[in-house]
Length: 90
Image (cartoon, rainbow, N blue to C red; front, side):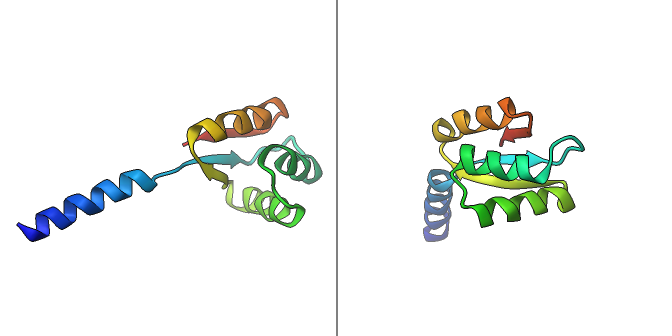
């Protein structure tokens, strides 16, 4: 009984903490500079963070560039899309 209650509490806490993510995908169109500038503008990245994300996207094909509540991510993702980048909220 104690084990079940503990598991239930863990599941509830896990659901409360779950955040959405903006995932940026690689493309063959945009330059590194454009991706970096857009991440700084849309996601409030510092230049080093934006550069690291751009490199991860280039070599791994995708990268989580921002986490948080959906309400915060939706306008940021829209800015990325309007800039011609490929991104989605998951």
